[in-house]
Image 1 (cartoon, rainbow, N blue to C red):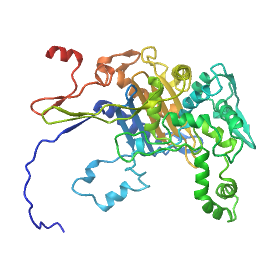
Image 2 (cartoon, rainbow, N blue to C red):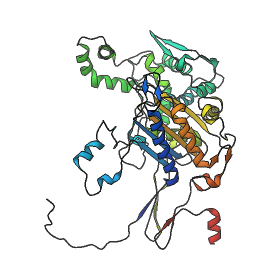
Image 3 (tube, helix red, strand yellow):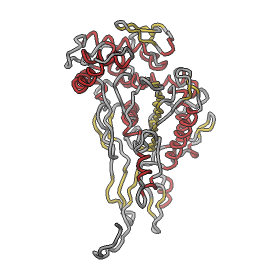
Image 4 (tube, rainbow, N blue to C red):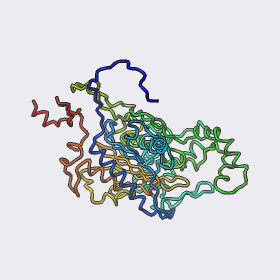
Amino acid sequence: MGRVLGDSGEVAGRAGDTLVTSIDSRVQGVVEQQLDQTIKTARKTYDKVTHKNYVADSGAVVVMDAKNGRVVAMAGAPTYSPKVWVGGISSKQLGRLYSAKSDNPLLFRATQGQFAPGSTWKPFMTTGALNNGFSPSTRLDCSSNFQVGNRLFKNYESESYGMIGFDEALQISCDTFFYRVGFKFWQRYGSDVADVKAKDPLVRTAKLFGFGKPTGVDLPGEASGRIADRVWKKAYWKANKSYYCKIGKKPGNDFLHVFAREFCVEGYAYRAGDAVNYVIGQGDTLVTPLQSARAYAALANGGTLYEPRVAKAVVGPDGRTIREIKPAVVGRVKVSRSSLKYVDQALLGTAKTGTTAWKFMDFPLDKIKIRSKTGSAEVHGKQSTSWVASYDKDYVVLMMVTQAGTGSGTSGPAVRKIWEALYGVQGMKVHTRDAALPGAKPPAGLPVFARDGEILPPMTRAEKKGNR
């Protein structure tokens, strides 16, 4: 009732410790602005497929230090002001935060949102293929479609490019090329649809890159994502069989009823269609944006997988470092260095001649060597999810917006703006002095704690030399 019943005494206040994070406020500001602007622009853009504007109901951006897994910036949408918790929160305000109508603002999409990765999945599948029988000299048909059983799997906009290699398949994001890769593995190892123990090199590769389990980031409530392999499919069938069988008994020939009848009888079966969907990041596989950024960092640094870190150190009020929180190595991705190098070189071409070229045609790619991969993940009953994953030797920049269209078309401009901020790009020139981070690199040191309590940015090498 708010009545004071007694006083147990007083404890004198003291200056608290400071948690230093790897988040840079300037980069964070750019990231939040670009995510907000991208969503607003998408909502004003007409979708020719669904004949309405894009819904663009959520999104996320991750900027990561590729060399150690530290998070430089991370944002999610929709979001809310944390001030609502101060002094107590009303039932109405709390209801809005948990409301599906408000698109669940409490769900932080960067670490808790789980989405189909679309074609951003293909670089990891390429390393798996190159380590299990395929080679850089492999040529497969990038046809307009690929027949699996009685279903025709189409290439994006039914384009056909003829016989190409993995490099060009990544750059132009050819689906039918990768359908053939997935189908070949299914034929070789998994044509027994009920065998949950069948060998699957592409599933194993995804696990090597850390998908299917939490990254270990030092934030609460992280989602694990999901690798939709044979084991998962059979477990899902067992758990949901009775529900779908009940629906299947009811009359109706719409998608839901037909699916329910098929699922009831053979929902455990891992068919060729599952395999070809899996290899292009479609179907039931789900990833978080942070998982994907961490995996791309492994491509950038030569195969080291880190636990992402937001916390950098704990510093006392006197400026003394109490505890330094160092990057944590999970392990090395056990694929050949040659396959990592091949994918790295192939993704260099995406911004030059591939799917992001139209957004980077007047960007100084000779100075800032950006590797990139786009994705447009299709979700039944919804508009496509837009993805762009990009990196160089220092950073990973990844953006995702749900129900927002193509990767490069929707997320490409914002990703470019973030890269421009990171390096101080103006036109075709790079001005590192104007970069969001001093020297265009994440600072290795900790902030300076002045005697009056002011916290200043880490000193540069020149400043340290002058102080001596």
